[in-house]
Amino acid sequence: MSTINFAAREINCKIVYYGPGMSGKTTNLKYVFGTIPGHLRGEMVSLATEDERTLFFDFLPLDLGSVQGFKTRFHLYTVPGQVFYNASRKLILRGVDGIIFVADSAPNRLRANAESMRNLRENLVEHGINLKEVPLILQINKRDLPDALPASMIRAVLDPKGELPVFEASAHEGVGVFECLKMVSKLVLERLSQPK
Amino acid sequence: MIEPSLALYGEAFDQVEQHLLDLLNATGVRYCLMVDRKGFVLSHKEALWAPRPPALDSIATLVAGNAAATGALASMLGERTFSEQIHQGENGVLYVESIGDKALLVLIFDSSVPLGKVKLYAKKTIAQLESVLDNVGEAPKIEFDKGFSDTAGALLDDLFG
Image 1: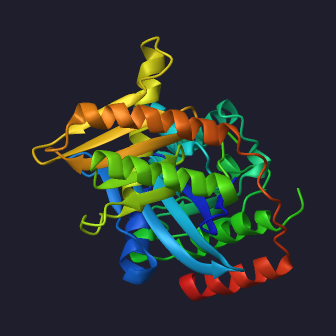
Image 2: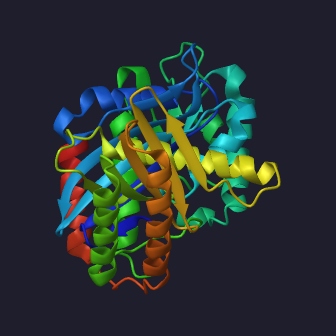
């Protein structure tokens, strides 16, 4: 649940980009950082290895502005996608308010997508988070690849019941990046005004 | 939710601010923060003479991430917790200590400030803060109505197009 600081009248929401290694999570964040005007965002922090693979997380704070007298901010995080960094992924999921799952359209990454989705579900269960209570968006990234798998096939593997909002994206060109972020932010904030 | 959420308000918030201010004055540290385990700044005080602090959001996030990683290490090594972290540079020191399971105290100060003195006062302040946090009751219920969603939606349109 979002942290509400009554004294400072602030609402802070944590949004996490999840997905397999090299699917474009950091690219999403870099695009947001490069596009949102400086006065509405903070510095981007990247804890990455020398070859630009995320080691712990990337972090970017965004200011939405004042909603009914509450200064509303989003803290965007990415997780390290590589399989062996699961301990770090688990830590970053703590206190999550919304998730964007970034899937890779490359044919040889279908299995990695499926494993990462299963890993997300396992980690959420381990944290005692009810999957139905956390807004989850599916971003099918790298649609511009010449041999990209059909989006319907990727969706059938990751969201067989068709429950998740889905967006197609090419994050390095900025396509679909804001659409996903806007949708997850909207769902997170709507939860605040829904009766429990 | 997994992490304890702190809803500081009213008298408890004022007490926390006062304890942090007392600690700042007694020790001569530059910046004194209380952050929650999710990496959000709950309260922050800085010395009058201190230059503008670096981005507090980023500091809080990294400190909380670091504390979470250290906690995971402690558990793997059979410890309940490693409650204290000290990072000493050439010119400055970052000192982080747990305030119970709910929050972290973060102190940033020059190397010239005696570490022992900081630790001594920090422990005293932590006991006081723990007592304040233990007595924090339920947060006042705020009803966010449909107007909230509408305003938020308009702001999201402005931000993301």
